[in-house]
Image 1 (cartoon, rainbow, N blue to C red):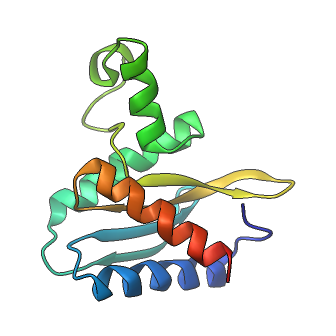
Image 2 (cartoon, rainbow, N blue to C red):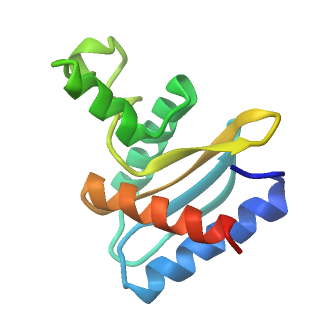
Length: 138
């Protein structure tokens, strides 16, 4: 949970994620948004426009449900449902696959999203969890 989240925070968070991904040579796209405004976006080597589309689709899931994209997809599976069929949302616009998290500001709530796309969904999710924890503990 953030105590504040402005353009400078978004830039610092985005660069933090990029540095960690580059150190591991991960082929990911990194996105940080506040509301509908993209405050940070970087595409590392090995990514394509498909990763940009995935991050947008996963971000819309977080915007709609207020939980990580992986959590939403897992919740559907636990209930014996499939997000693509049972959410009744356009799969060209929404993807409940791991890698995007809500940005939550204390005493405010969800203000945006942070995420990556390029790895298998559980790895996208784990990377963001690890890096968010490290960033918030600085």
